[in-house]
Image 1 (tube, rainbow, N blue to C red):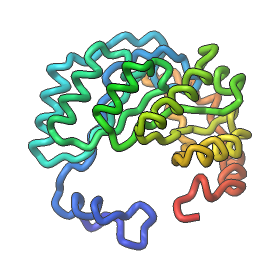
Image 2: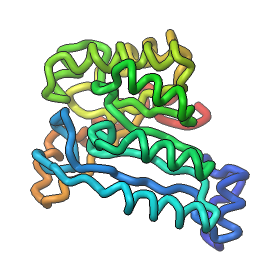
Image 3: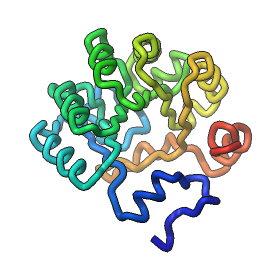
Amino acid sequence: YQNAPSKNDDDWTPLGDFYERHGLPCELHIDLTDGCNEKCVHCYLPKGGSHFIEKELVFKVLKEFREVQGLTVYISGGECMLHKDFGEILRYAKSLDLNIIVMSNLTLCDDGMVALLKEIDPQFVNVSLYAVTESIHDSITQMPGSCVKTKAAIDALQKAGVHVRLATPFMRENKGCVEELKAFAAERNVHLIADSEIFGQLDHSCKNQSHALSLSELEELVSAHKNVFMKGC
């Protein structure tokens, strides 16, 4: 605990401090699958993944996490909505009184999925939106029409009262889209979570790194948009 954040650090919170001091696990991240209907150029998962975690194993992990006083679970992928037991998994997590954050591209978010998320009432649905401009977003996802589907789903969830956040990694393809994403988020009164980390692929090929910003490009982008990239600015 000697190296834990102090109150002067940007990432310090009273809740995080409590979990640090008592040695408790605060957050759990579960990737339900490595499969995805999008093929994002920067993704760290090799293309063509088709593995799905069995729901019984997910239930076991969630139960054990709750038993040691775990608080928040991130449900992700790949695209987590591809999992055939997605609804059952969310309902089980809710039955354990876990704080739920869903991470999705929302292209599979139809009326039934909106109803499910309204029922579950997660703290947030973190949405992968790379640009408001369709050609730029779709060039990253390599899925024509994905931008239209994602934006429509965001509005449908908001209308249903589900809390949404935009989660956007910035790379060479969308580094000029900060202002349009800020405006999109402001119009809907949602947060824009900016990121710049492009992790190398799990197969060690690291081909996706060609899309990452150089250090000078990143410095220039952060300097121009400090209120997006830096907490408290």
